[in-house]
Image 1: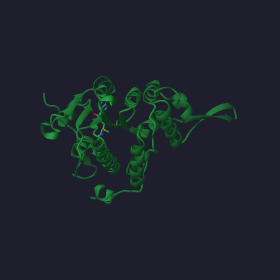
Image 2: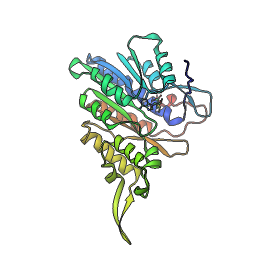
Image 3: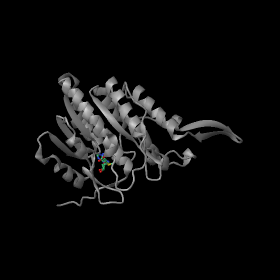
Image 4: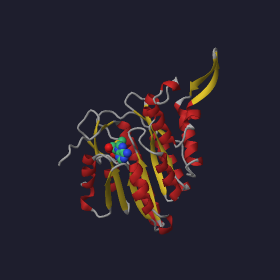
Length: 287
Ligand SMILES: C[S@@+](CC[C@H](N)C(=O)[O-])C[C@H]1O[C@@H](n2cnc3c(N)ncnc32)[C@H](O)[C@@H]1O
């Protein structure tokens, strides 16, 4: 039975994100190739492959389509999405190339059970994995499993909009159990509470005060190093909506010093960009 494909409308900062991924992927494959290593691209929340630019009919390549166009090319591609129509669209990308593998289902299971075990340091395989959920849909075990391989580095969407709207309320007692559970699953344990709130002395005894989002984001950066075990985690870059509000932070985590330096540079360059005028594209600005 055919399933309707609804492609996402995305704003300027999604284009920035995709340009960052493509820019880094180019360096990544050059370096791996010169070291005779096999490069693999993994997209956990892959989407349909294409998007529409918000407020126009302009079609934009999503992360999987963009990854397929990177030169030098990856040796292998793994795309996962839980939406059947998007999986159908993903299967049509790449014109039947045999090194593209598409999976339908929850990437929190598929990555750990089927994809990551294929990437082995001792077999000279290395992977770049994109974890780009809409909100708190990622399980910490995926991050930890990627770090444990020593061979997989990640770009990670840290979804602060979902956290701010549903979890980091001034009165933590009013947050639903479901939303607290989603936060704990993403963070890996309940230590997000200490990162998110500071105990203060109020008129009627001890109270909690909500911390600014950059403090919470810094705490997650430390977690990627200390709890997941990634050696290098550059400062993440904020991704904003058209009103300037931060929707998520884009993190990168790796075991490789050169990767860290390259991403730091790309992040610094990218954070200088503002809103593009109507009809403009981000690509012009990367040169
Ligand atoms: C933000 S979009 C990805 C956009 C894509 N990275 C890009 O830049 O083109 C998130 C995608 O994740 C998918 N998704 C949501 N939960 C998922 C899960 N648990 N496992 C796999 N895919 C999931 C949605 O269907 C959606 O297509």
